[in-house]
Length: 209
Image (cartoon, rainbow, N blue to C red; front, side):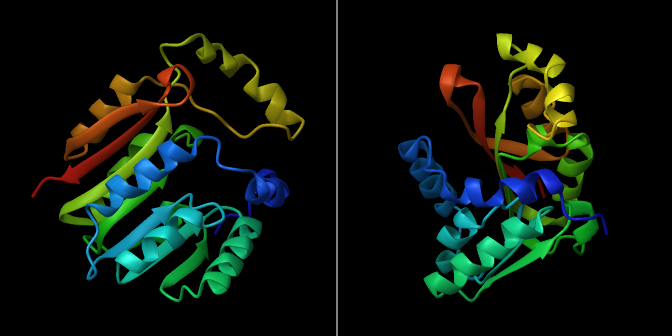
């Protein structure tokens, strides 16, 4: 298994203390996701960070596996869960592929604010499809700057990464992302913009039977 990510380990405490930038949008995402959740469901969240979203959803499902590449993030998440009296979230370090869940073993998978940080998003989306049951739900929120002036940040990212100031960031459009999700065997049930200039997209997709 790969080592804990140093950038996110270093950022964990600051990340945990940062206020939600758009609380209304965050609450809308929670509410729309919970419309799909049922008490008997098993859910997986990859790129869970410090676990806030998993903890919000935990009372609505049987169990959540929350995974992240930063052990420091996960330590904070475990502490949050203990403080909230949540016992049905298991925090595990690693990538989605390293977690190696069984075929069709989850009712819902969440990948929030993480897909644009991954070099292999098509492989990750395919892995989500593999581990979801037929009819299962994939919920994602991604930054899509391919059609905005922010796409030129790709020239800055290598420098920022070299000095430990930025993580990887991958450039794609909303249309590219939605097409890739559909190509992996999903139907799109909800898709809407948020964030400055609408560059972030929230998608709920259902795995076809």
